[in-house]
Structures are given as structure tokens and as C-alpha cells.
Image (cartoon, rainbow, N blue to C red):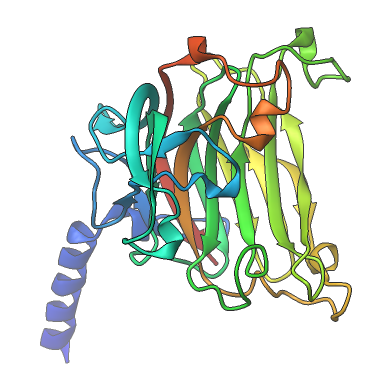
Length: 301
């Protein structure tokens, strides 16, 4: 038995050395189960798939996503997703399959996702990132269901961890929001169906982006059966519960947020939301624009 214990201890010690730190860290009851620290010199495609399409998420976004060094790069421990002015061709509707109609956009940008490679049911999902500004610039860190168990969007849900639109663009001050007459808000949102017809509803909140010497902040959600809460730099600013996404024709419950979701990082340019807000439209003076991500980490109880 002693020899067995010694051998087992040696094996355990070796596993600890070889295992990625992502699955060893544990704080406040949360155990880190997945991470990308972007320490290499290229995107780790065992974790992420780069998007290459002009779908635009149904938001009339102007960019096409392209898997190129100009739009997706990893250097000095940081992922960079960049939108540039460049004619780009891709599938107009990637959800219709690879033989669908094509589209050409005036801009190219970067988008990566973990679909088919990693998804989670509940957890703390967080990223340290620096987001760009400018009219029409729309960075996002978000989650979509791995399988559309309850039907197409929005029936199966969406969790937006971070969105900003038009940072620095003119807006009307209301309290600390738009202080100095410039856009400065961070948004966290869930999307879901409000009834059996699939009518879109959303819930969540926003906060003012805190000051930072280098522009980096940690954006996070904590997602449990009881609630979804949003944080910036560890400070909670919004929280929703199953009562908030209760369908009009059903009892309150965790659906649709009771199935695994995968992670998406992207930088959009234009679209219904940014073009309808602040100075309206898009301003090409904001380009090239880059979202930088230092790390992404997922923890579970």
C-alpha cells in the first residue's frame, strides 16, 4: 500500500506540473475549468474557431468577418480583433449553410467562437479587455446556446457579457452617464422570448466605464440557476433572476438559460444599435479599431 501511495503521489505531482493552470486555480468556491491567456504567437484553434462570413447577426452590421492576420492576431500575450476598411466577401447568411448567397462588405473584422470546442452550463465567465471607441464601433463578448434546444433566436437565449457602442461619441449627459457629453457606458444583457410566439425581450443593465490608466477592465458574468449578474472590475452593476425572463405563457424557471452556452468575441462596425445612437451612422475616422483581450477565463462552482 505504501508503494502504491508513493507511486500515486508521484503521478499526481506530475499531473499538477503538466496540467494547465486554468484548471487548477480556485477562489471563493469557484474552480477555473477553462482559459486562454493568449500567450502564444497565434490563435489557438483547439479552443477557438475564427468566423469568416458576412452574416452580421441580423443587425445590419456593415463588416464581414475574415480569418486573416489583419483582423485576428495574437502577440505579446494579447488577442487583437481589428476592424479595417477593406472590401470583403463572404456568406450573407452562414446559418443557411455553405452554399448560400454571397455578400461583399466594405469592412473586414475579427470574430472567434468556442462553438463545438467548449461550452458550459453555469459559471463565472470573465475577460480582461480594452475596448475601442468611435461612432459605429461595437465590441462584444457574449454567449450563445450550443444547441438551439428551445428554437431559433431568441427562444434559446443569449447572454451578453460586455457590449459598448460608440464610446467617446457625443451624447446627452444623464448623471454619470455620458459625462462630459461623451458616450461612456458598458452594457450587460440577456435576450429571450417573452411568449410562445417568440417575441423578443431583453433584460439587464448598464454602468459607467470606470477610469483606468491603461484602458483594460475585467468584464464578467456569474450565471447560476438562481440569477445572472454582471460585473466590471469586480463590482456588480446588474442582476436578473428567472422571474425577469419568465414567459407570459409559462411558469417562472431557468429555461432557456438551463442549457450549455459557448463563448463569442467579436468587433462589429455599424448596425442598427450603434448607427441609431449618439452621432448616428458610422464614422470611418474610427478605423482601424481594435479590441484587445488579455485573457478569458471560465470558472464553475
